[in-house]
Length: 272
Image (cartoon, rainbow, N blue to C red; front, side, top):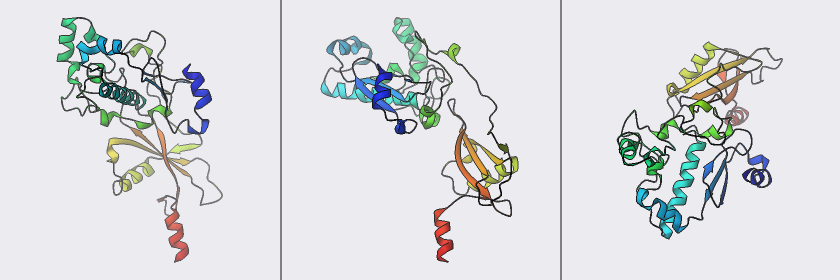
């Protein structure tokens, strides 16, 4: 059903730039509708009194208008967190329902994954005082700073795991590929230019370039025109769901320095 909505109501030009969110009955979930990209979210707005009563003891959710609104908000935040790369195969406190297995199980859970106070943890997801991702203040091994683990572009790329029917967390056995050697067809990795770029970016980047990985590639076959952008720069976040993505294209000047295209530089040159 979600695939039908995805194909008929989600314009192709928005795919890869936006996530598609549908509100209806049942759910919620963030599962691929087509391929293996997590750009499709379904949440429900029809929370019944029966639903609230079933979860009243465990979560303390009030069956009021405010309770419904907060439940919808926390659900959407949870599913968007998945689309940013927070998954049970990255941190086992995510989507973990083992606390439902009796009093002893709940006690064990509270002493371990209960420390992961995040909207991504089912144990805290519907509590009225938790409408946030974890800041990691409880420390490892049972907590993490979700904000530092986000790869916002996760929903644009094929996931490393396939959620087949009857999927059970954490799902390590469903991972279909690990880290592989990265390369760009027609381009050669240039270590010297990579070091040059990292040195220069420290002066203007709002993010510490050491916290991510950089690779600079130079076109294998030289072009006839020196203005051609012969340089490709790729970046990879040091988070479990991070992948290599194109950061920018550039060219080399006569001194072998990386030059980025700048409309302002063109205007200044003409005006001078």
